[in-house]
Image (cartoon, rainbow, N blue to C red; front, side, top):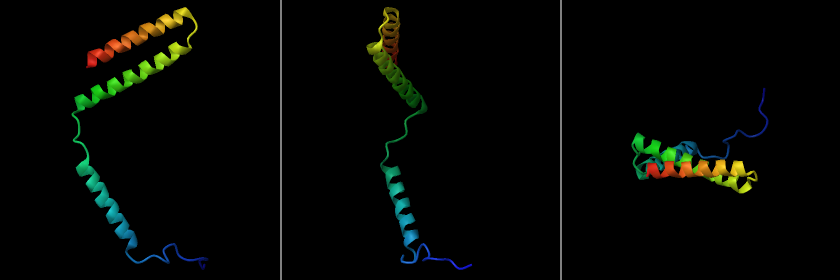
Length: 91
């Protein structure tokens, strides 16, 4: 069976693909050298917890701005206060 059309690499210089791969590997190595040092696992856990609490607080504030029932508003205000206390305890 004969292939119709030009091979995929017909106009490309020989070795071009390997040079591209080599350049990508060098760039990745440079990025690893310039990257910030890894944080200890305990610090990462605290940072993830803080981020999660901040996202939850943001969501609760958005819900509060749309809430109409007084009981629902009180519940959201209490939840926001609790989240803010947890954030303070993390600091």
